Each structure stands twice: as C-alpha cells, then as structure tokens.
Image (tube, rainbow, N blue to C red; front, side):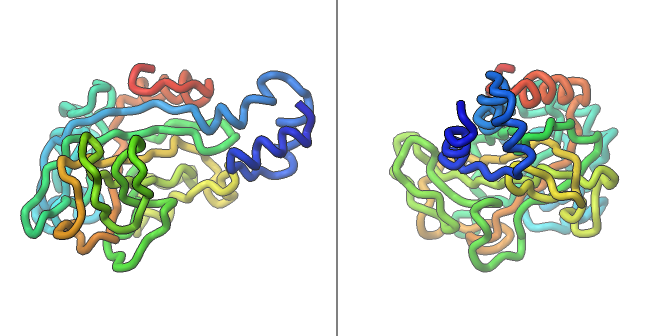
Length: 283
C-alpha cells in the first residue's frame, strides 16, 4: 500500500498520528506495517463481571471511612469496602468470569426515584489505544474517570449512556428511553490509558493518568497502559425518573483499583494487546 492510500485508510478509521509514526507504518511496506494501525483499534480482551454488592463506601476517595460516600455498585472483587487494600483484594473472590481479575470496579448506583436498581452486570473492555506497546497496570494502581460533581454534559470520550450496539439509539449524555427486547440501559465510562510511570494514585485520583491523543501518550504521562472501558448494564429501559446516586444524569464516573493477578494481566497484555489480537472473553 502506498503512503497516500495508507493515509486515506487512517483518516477513515479516525486515526491521527505524527509524521514519524506515519513513516514507520508507510515506509517498509511490510504486512505488519500496513495492518498495524487497524489492528491497534481492534485488539482487546474482555472481563465480564456480575454485580457483586453495593454500599456507601469508596476506598479511593474515602479510605477507611465507612458509609461516607454516595451509594456505589461494585463489580469484580467481592470484598471491596472502605478499608480495602491491595493485599485484602488479592486474597478475595471475584464476580468476574476471569478468575485472575480480582480488580475492584465501582460506579454510582442507578436510582429509580430513590430506589437503587441493581445492575445485571458489567462488560469491561481492555483495549490498546496507542501505537506504542502497552505495559500492564502496576499492582495497586488506582484511578477515577468522569466527574461525580458534573451537572452538565461531560465529554463523550469519557462517559455516555446508550441502549447497546444492536439498536438505533444514539449515544447520549442524557438517559435515553430504550426500546426493550434486550436493548436495555447502559452507562459507559472510559478510563485514561497513559500513566506518569511513578505514582499509583494522586490527590485528585486523576492527575497521575492522562488520555492518549492521536494514538500517543503525552510526554508528561509516557507509559501506555490498557484503555479500560466499564459498561454497566441495567434491567430497565431508562427514560424519566432515573438518576445516579451522585446526582442527576450527567455525573457518570467510575473507579478502578488494580488487584489483578499480575501474572495473568501481564499474559493478557502480551498475548492480546501487544500481539494486536481480538481476544474477547476467551483469550
């Protein structure tokens, strides 16, 4: 493929890369160079997790302060509470199908009026968002995506609502009304995929992380890590009368506490993301 044709392909795929990266892809003309950009977009592995429990705890924002937070719904690690540590999480069970995924995931509870709606589960995508090879999250990394205090629409790059991929309902910052028939309400939250390489957390639980730009990590956060997208699934159609426990419908956010088996996480990053394979739930 000529550089011109490759440029057109990248444009269609929505990729924006620098001149050096473009030259690398276009120059040698090898099969790997021609296909790597498309493979980066597709490579993934997935963790499918059942709903575990809910409580007013948040071990990242309010460690050791039981009941301090708005109501959260937890996926993954079955032991997550205000006092959770890396050691306590690693020794606990998980609601995820992948036994090695003992990480903790949580999001604000969905409320119908004032009544919590238990999610049916969550699908958690781990993708590669950069042309540069990905490194596994370090053990104990914590991060938050989205703003719990948002009262207006957040960037769709970070969070949005929809009804799933099989119906013609656009992604929205507002809670839609889904058509049913298996097309129920979902909340998507996307975490940043670039790490500063030093800190497992930061004062705002965000500054040690950054979003990739044009398939590259910024110089301030040079380490490419998996791009995590948490998709919360609910047994309701949405519409009027629903809100998040953090307030309204715009305050979508989620927390991640890495307590994976590091051996298993490293294997998946190597054999799926860095091998540019679509592993799904089985890789």
